Length: 228
Image (cartoon, rainbow, N blue to C red):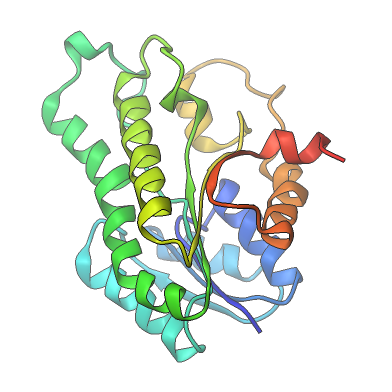
């Protein structure tokens, strides 16, 4: 039975992916900063779920995630989903507080890379896969998205380089599209985002990605939803 680590799985996309993999028979190690929310989310997931409460920017927490996966036989898949938006409403780069920007980069770039470094030896052994959740804001110049978008752009390039350096591991940087999540609502405070699809709607595309195992690269889940 395959083992997956999914960060930021107490709600939103992370929870949707965890629920789908649990139903498909994966053993899961999931985390979240809010322990009560994490445990409540885990109770809705079928199968074997190990919860590790904590913040992925903390080294001891990252080690705890890997140790939990190792007790299950070792991670075959790492999904770096946890991240932060930054201020809401989002400021322009001309006014962006640099101390806050450092936090955005810590959570969205450095923490995923640090966890990846810990998991990579096992992924090499098991010909596993790495998924880094990204965004179209990494590529498009949306006003007000300079902090989050540039952090995701850095994560994309780090993923791109990892794909060249780790030929035995599938490395996918995955754009799930605009979804109806708390983070997306925070990006548009006071606006109605009910027209955005729920995170569960992209699960079939994510499962197809894992089943088809294409070469490493950037993946738009919307493309997999419509592809034959």
